Image (cartoon, rainbow, N blue to C red; front, top):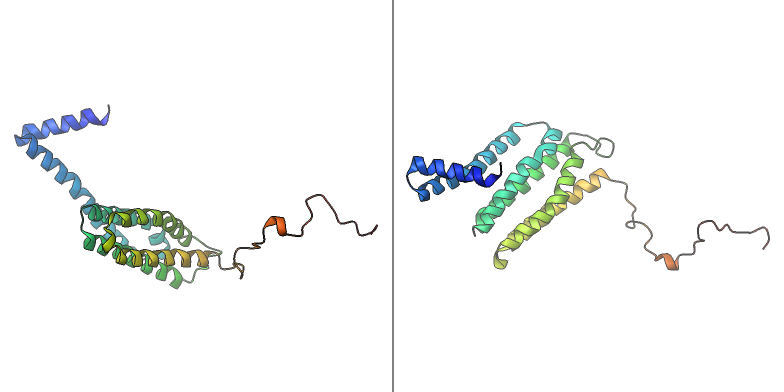
Length: 194
């Protein structure tokens, strides 16, 4: 059974109980919009109650996605101040998790659990944040961009904690292959007959 007949049946049942299609539609939309708020509150409580840094980091995606959905809804409604408060809560939760992971004394290079999941989640989330920021009117974006840079810095810090041994000069030799003095594979230098 597809979703449309079920939705029609629900609307019809609500109409029978409420007496008017408009009041039925209003009560249905109110019920569906209240669910994410209750879910977000439950996720916040669950996050605050969990004191295991690795477990919090592994499960942050649930709260993070709910906060991003709330932020998107607030931005689309034109409430930039509320969206910024939600974004700052997101950043604050990230900072507290990173601090707890660092204080745990775990070597992220050898035991990446928690660090890795959080870094992967953040890498994916940065694109979503960019899309949400574009919803905010241009003249109100500056605080969002500042907070976004903070989140990107947390992501970079996690990456460097996970991979601390990086080349000092960057990511390897940047000389174009055509300018390197290398022999093609399979060709040996013949110094005996020179």
